[in-house]
Amino acid sequence: MLAPVINMILVAVFPLAMAYAAISDLLTMTIPNKVAIALVVAFLALAPATGMGWQAFIMHAAAGVLVLVIAFGLFAAGWIGGGDAKFCAAVALWIGWGTALVEYLVAASVFGGALTLLVLSYRQAVLPAFVTRQPWLLRLHDAKAGVPYGVALAAAGIFTYPDSIWMKVVTG
Image (cartoon, rainbow, N blue to C red; front, top):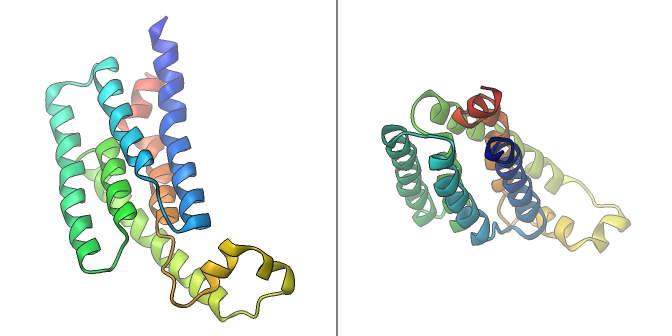
């Protein structure tokens, strides 16, 4: 009886967290801490519930810690936001070590580059009047504002999730 519930949670929690983070970052230029916290708590609950062994658990934790250290270095340099750093580390915790982590980071870089080009292009455009009534679109148009990189991080998470250990649990 528990297995179908765990499968439903695995299919829903991560993608919903990705969608929430992306939308939040796009609309407010922030990723709430509760997203990263929820991902960590869900991981800690689901890892033993799915039968993840200690070695795999440690490798997932190592991926999260490594990405957190690197991301906070990028944050300290002013290249990314603190929410992006925490969110990226929480996603890495779910993705785990090895090829999956490399795929996630490459996808985040590619999606982030494409997103940056789109935002820069958008910032060159003259905005129609109806757009000026949307604060989030004005903020996105502001050359002094950053790029909502959480959108790219979330897209990369969704892109790599189907090949994750979690989906192997669901599909058997």
